[in-house]
Image (cartoon, rainbow, N blue to C red; front, side):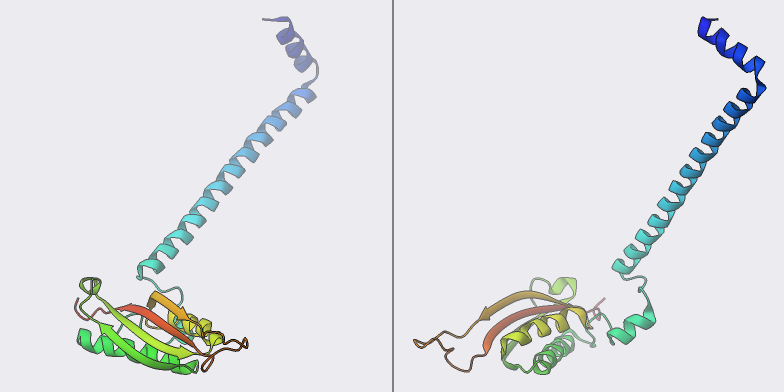
Length: 188
């Protein structure tokens, strides 16, 4: 044994209090390390459960809270109708209603039921409308958070030209070309 080992052994043999204190300190350190490890495992399990719930919600298998979801945004997340043509008409009705709710007017519309996304069950719509500039944000919010789930694929905004006196020419309303799509599940 080395000289340092002999000194420690002699000190522990002469004073059992030092041995007990060291034993309790080592035991306390092991208990603390075990407690931290268990707390870390429980935190990871909680995070995994939250992530799994979020994944199920995003996959559409489990709504976050069915009562709150239906009260907040009534309707179904998909376009309804027995045929894709009826689903396209429902999409047009939903968008025209949203434009009307913000004080806008629909100038023209074109429903696309045979486009590139149609094979995946999506129905597209291109709408040309006029509205006041502050209403555009309300319209986009209504379309993106309401039911059915709609996606804004295209947004072209034309503001009125200013005249030589610095005033807006025409009615002062903006012209918006809006491409919107939604998913129809009737064909599946």
